[in-house]
Every structure is written in C-alpha cells, then in structure tokens.
Length: 342
Image (cartoon, rainbow, N blue to C red; front, side):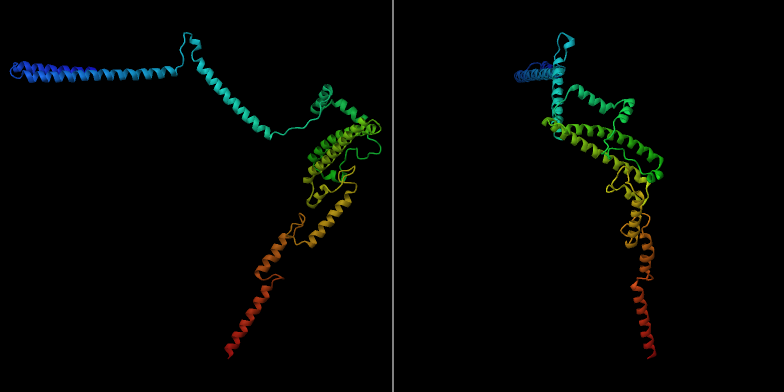
C-alpha cells in the first residue's frame, strides 16, 4: 500500500512538470527543466527502492508470525489421528515426573514420622490365620458358652474370678451405670477364663526339664502378667464409670489406692465409708474453708458474709479498726470541750 501511494505521487509530480514545460513552449528554460526532471527521476527511483525494502520487511514479519503460529499447533502429519502426539507425550512425561517426585517426597517425609512395629519371627500360616480370625471375628456364642463352663480356675488362685460390684454400691447406681458395669463384667469374664487356661499351661511347662521348654515358661509367665494388668485396668475403669453416681467426698471410694478383692470396692464398704466421713468432718473443722475442703461442706460463703464484709465495715468481732476509730473520736471530743471551757 505504501509503494502504491508513493508511485502515484511521483507520477502526478512528473505530469505537472511535463504540463508546465509544454505550457512554456520549451524556450530558453529547457536546460533547468531537464535538470529538475533528472532530480525527480532520482527521487522517484529512491522511493521505489525504499518501497521495495519496506515490502520485503513486511513479508519477513509475516513469515515470522506464521512460523510462531505453526509451532503452537504442533506437527501436522498426513494422519490426523497422530496430530499433537509428541507434545501430549512430552507433557504426560513431565506430569509423571512431577507426580513421582512429589510421591517420593511424601514417602521420605513419612518414613521419619511412621512408627515401625517390631515383630518377631513368623509362625505357621494356619495358626496365624486362626489367631487373626479369633481376634477380629471372635468365636460363636454357643462355643463361647461351652468354654466358660469347661474352663475352671485352680483352687489356690482366688484372683482368677470376675470381680463383683458391692451390693451397697450397686443399689444406688443408675440403670445406665448398671448396664455399663454388667457389660464390663462380661468382658472381664472372658479375660479371666483365658488367664485360667494359660495358668494351667504355665504350670505344665514348669514341670518339664527341657531347656527349650523352660524358655517358653518365661514367655507364658509374661503373658500372665499382662493379663493380670489388664484385669486391674478393667476394675479401675469400672470404678470411674460409677463416679458420677456418687456424692462429693464419697468419690474417694474410686481411688486407685483402695484395693479390690472379689468385690470392686473391697470387702468392708461400710468401714471405708465411715472413714471417709470422719476424715471429711475433721477437715471441715480444722480447715479455713478457703482451700476447698470437701464438696457440700465448704465454709467459704459463710466466711465471706460474716467476717470479711463485717470487718470491712468495722463491726466484725475481729475488727481492730472499730475500737481504734471510736477511741480516737472520744479523745477529740474531750479535747475540744476542755478548750471551750478555758
């Protein structure tokens, strides 16, 4: 477009020069006119070269733009189904590399935080499967009832029994607490029956003289110790579930220091309750009431109402400020009267 405009301008200028020359009649001005025409032709030639150069530059810009658009669309093959496969494959590889790097990063960080369980040597697969089924699925209720009847404790092991709740405590428990405690007793029964069977097995291992069997004896005794500890934990948990049904200071019945026997709160609950009551009375008598004491017998409220407020006003029995202020007023009045009399 620029070359067309420049060519038309040059043509118009040349036509004007020719018309002026014809009008003048070609007299003595022919020499200067020829020089002017030469200059115009030179200018016209330079403009043409410039237009050609501009057109070449425009073509080069168009080629570069086309090449960029062409690269953006990928490789165009004869088969339309394979269009852009190389680009897709490269992007897929890049995505997979990023995912793999991220996964490895998470795995490496997780290894530092993961708790590794220490396991012993594997046992027979059939036995392992049975143990897994028993601990995940349990056994049938009918077979469970039969085992409870068949397995009995040794006569000289009085602790291998289900701990009962004392009747005095059972009577004031709520129905919900009673139901929960009954379920806990059933769990404890299963634990105790298993301990009975293991106790007998441990006794048989101890009678053998084989050194390898003696090593197994240690493992059996450790298993018994763990079952005994689990039994104590169940008893303490049963007590904790009964705490909300007890009054204030009598929650000390659930203390871990109070030993249990065949009964959850020991053999003599009345004596234990009496001891707790006596301790509560003594504490209320010798305590100031500001340190808490037992629930329901605190003297904190009375101390605030009777002594603190009264002492602040100067009317309390222990208020020294009341006596001091009255003596000061009497002394001032007597001094004033003596001065007036003089």
